[in-house]
Length: 590
Image (cartoon, rainbow, N blue to C red; front, side, top):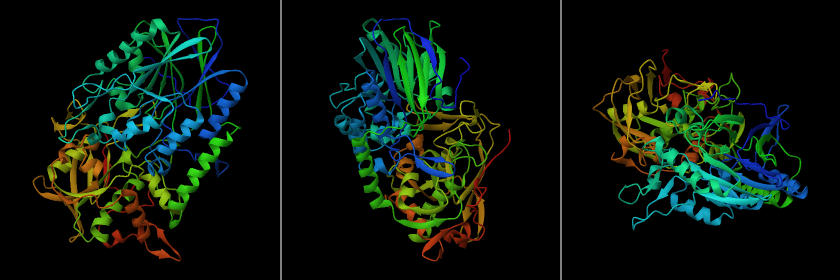
């Protein structure tokens, strides 16, 4: 694999280019692209210590309009994960975001894994609302009659006297990173499949088949793929670079999924031709402009912001923001110390999916508090997947909207009966890449299923190679070798002490339905567990209630360690002022 060149400086005038196999005397074509917007329609950026309006759909619409007014040929596309991420999407299942994308002028989109978070049927309704096309060559739906009903694998768009084929690709991680039950029938059988789950070769074949079907008909062949370049994709050989290296005929790859900033990476395909690969990061931190030149060269650049807004799109944005503020915008508490998903020492280094963080403790504690204190039930352990904690909470006044943005999926909190062995297996499942380094991110390797916890503490020994065995859908099967998770202890509330986990004992385990009822992140060990309380309330609402439960100082509750009701449990590990948490998860040195 080529050494990747990831450029984090978003300089608008900087171009990276590759030469295609075809040339043409037709006019230049500009492809404007986004990825992993995650409904950040009210994008704010920090400038000189103050938050100001950043790049938004209205500015992208202004960019498109200005370029067209200059006589340029423009195609606007997205590489997936647009309709889920904040309250702006979750309050109506993404329909308003689709309306914004329609107004902005999108022509095409790849299908991201989070497009299914409101349910597969819901996404099909969403796709009908869209005035642009969704494409995927490797996502398949099997109807009751046994026949496949799929999205188009590609779309050919004519612009500037050219024919440009866009091949859609969906990540094989879709079936487990979105709720697995979304892809199953009433009998628990999968009625959806994604090529690449069983073998990366299936993914390569799907892409190659689409290339072969269109290559002779078009001037350019571009992959629009929701495939990342993080450690999980690289280890599974399903990254965008892997697809390029194992196919022939692509001219460029517009990617997403891993939220990586790749201005212009040149990756050689099976025939040794350099293919331009790019990805804009996430949350509208930048927009890409790819130029298909008249000389056959492909160039790309990024813009972090744009000065012109489209007034019609801006009105739609403002209306949506105002409506959300009316519902979720009231202050509920004051946070003393920032609760973060990122390292306080290295800017933009996300750690919530790799180690304990104070926001992980806080979110897990909210569920632990809810069942033990608010509901008066006995909850032994609470778990939350790091991938489900989407953003930080800044210090100062906090609102329900802040809680909704942390947990935007609309998951319900549950309490089940689980054995110590099942809990151990779940913790082990979350540590499959712990101790490895992701050189793309200059960060510890991530796993969305890494578990943040309450009522329990444990150690991870990364000197042992992970021996978790999964099935072809990514579901947990067994642990074949030594456990990396060790010295697991559960807090005894009556004794005020942590006691060793008993493999045969039944514990009361709390979490969200995504994990405990729907086998999210592959946690199939809980599939048949008995429920104590099912669907007790939405996660973000319980998080907000936990905020309100802190000791008041004046009008509002003050969120700090000493003000938590859980401090009443003598010996309970809790420290929200430490960005790395209270020491519930210890990662040993190799």
